[in-house]
Amino acid sequence: MTARALIRDLAALPDGPVSVAGWVETVRDQKKVQFVVLRDESGAVQLVNPRTVGEDGTVVADEPATTISGLSQGTFVRATGELKHDERVKLGGIEIKLTSLTVETAAIPETPIAADSGIDKRMDWRFLDLREPKHNLIFRVQTTFEHALRQYWVENGFIEIHTPKLMASPSESRAELFQLDYFETTAYLAQSPQLFKQMAQAAGFGRVFEIGPAFRADPSFTSRHATEFTSVDSEISWIDSHEDVMKLHEELIVAGFTAVKDKHGEEIERLFGVEVTVPTTPFPRIPLAEAKRIVAERGYEVPRADDDMDPEGERQISAYVQETYGHEFVFLTDYNASIRPYYHMRHEDDPTLTKSYDLIFNGVEISTGAQREHRVDILAEQAKEKGLDVEELDLSFFEYGIPPHGGFGMGLARVLMLMLHLSNLRETTYLFRGPTRLTP
Image (tube, rainbow, N blue to C red; front, side, top):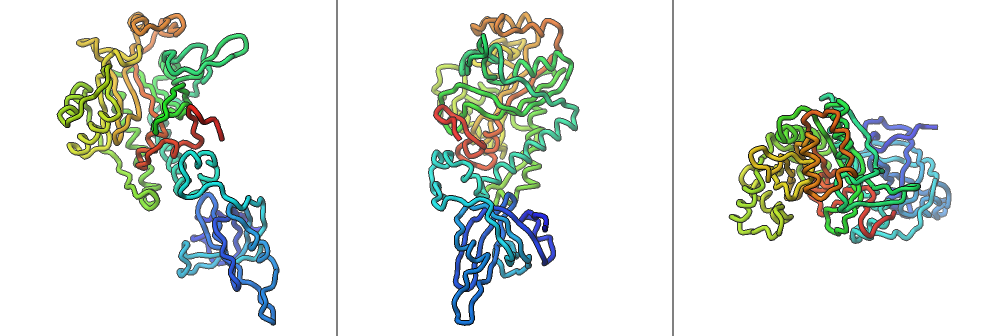
């Protein structure tokens, strides 16, 4: 039996016997010849079956003609035949003249979604939605992007960790926290790997990274929020300030975008109409107070009661950065301590400000990073200021020594959404989870 070939590899093969497998995309069942467009995970190819015609001119009901006539869209089949290179064939300049066709699993003829279906309907039938080449590409881009990040980390001496997602106490605060029964006690789903990343610094790991799930009981229904998401995290020891974290962060982004552009740039441009731009370094850095002044000068006053920036403010400052620097990224730095977690270090000369940043990409926040407070007495005091129970947080590992350190957490789906200029992170999440979605 001829080994299965991936469709993307057929163009490099000589004319001759070949075997492929995939699902049926379209069927043209004509009197003299049948055409089937077969798609697999790598591409699409045209299968051709000339019909057998009797001496009296009638079409003979033989195989594989009878099987082809009964095919429905989405049916998974195996096909063998003769590969032929023919520049007249619009689909890749190749086709396969069939000798046999075997149905592995037949699909229901009525397809529940169409090209113009709304996103919620498409999410209901996500496994069908992902058969679309455009949607398939998103997750090949994701794979390339993650691989490039890992390659950077490994080549620079980082250690990969896998932190628990079941916790005895909240990882950040009790806000947006999922709670569940755990035998005779209560457990919580990790909002982030924050304390575990810092524990690795106390363990002497030095540089760590993790790509894993995080959970937020956030009732938001925006295009940017999910209750379960993939978080890209990194933490490093012996830093002087959050500037060291920003330098790491921008180098990672450049590595990821370079790999995506090199491998998928042309296909992204063809299917999404988007040119992937590898950002230059250093990324622009603007203190938050200055960013608010710039936004105000552009005619927008941030209406928040607290000291934070709002989504429209982030869009405005991104527009300014694009106009001024020609850059898609900007670090907003030095956030007020009132709106930052207890573990962010504060400036020595102004304790109302933290050594922290948000990374804004095309008008949307994708990440928060900071230098952490490593001095346990100050850390405990800052936790108390936030109204947190220090005993519940269990900061005991700080008492055994820990170096100055910092890091960031970044939402993977948001990065991909903005890279491909999509409007909703549901598009870049394999199986989305939100306040009203637990299936499929």
